[in-house]
Amino acid sequence: MKKKDLARAVEIMADAWQVGTALIELPEECRPKTAAEGMQLQDALAEALGFELGGWKIGCTSEYAQKLLKTDGPFAGRVFAARCNLSGATLSGLIYKLRGLEGEFAFVLGKDLKPRKRPYTRAEVRDAVMELRPAIEIVDSRFTDWLAVNTPSLIADMGCNAALILGAPVKGWKKIDLTKATAKMKVDGKVVGSGKGADALGDPLLALTWLANLLRERGGLKAGQIVSTGTCTGFHKAAEKCKVVADFGKLGKVKLTFV
Image (cartoon, rainbow, N blue to C red; front, side, top):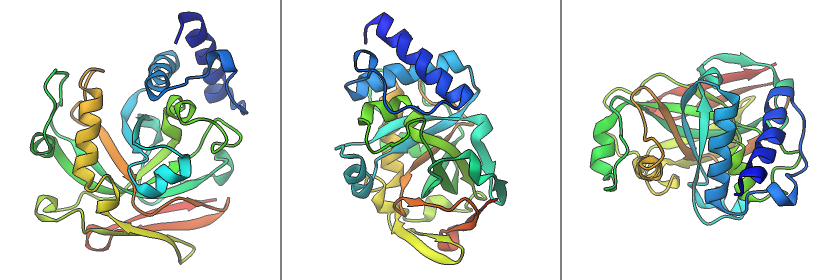
């Protein structure tokens, strides 16, 4: 993107993030047209906002999500530290327009995955992981209709992350075949979505490897950062007031209440 167009887009989106202004879409002249431009704008917006980084989310790792957003591959979004919560959190449903719920496998890194030219392997990435945690991602957007704007604009909007709710660390997770691990999303006791680890790019660890390689020329990943690897339960728009449970079977449950 041209410097003046990038600056204008950052100004508009920063206002939406900080003041709560709802956007229909970015003006044509400063709207990102490709995934690379979306990330360019996301980088610049994150710098302008100055929020502490807690980790990353990976969007569109499942066929379901790719069809929903009419894209053919995953994308990355920043998760700010203030938006990371533990299971049992109670949040105001009025804060979020979408209240999109997604059950995901999240990893906490124990080692840096530093910038380098050579791609990371799944084994290297797996070795860098300290914890696996079941998670709920809350999806929201600064755009009034997130499905009406192009995917690069959603990428710029931190990949539409609103919050991440984390369950307890899973003991002995490296002995578990995550491709077969199941997840169910329940709202007020009713199952609204289900799936398994294989829905995230075939394997949550492969999704994490994808991110490590996307970021190896953009600063890399750091120890302590959390990475949520994409929905395995589809997408469900929750009511303003409800009780949410993401049930990962033996891997644990994640609870959230909207009030």
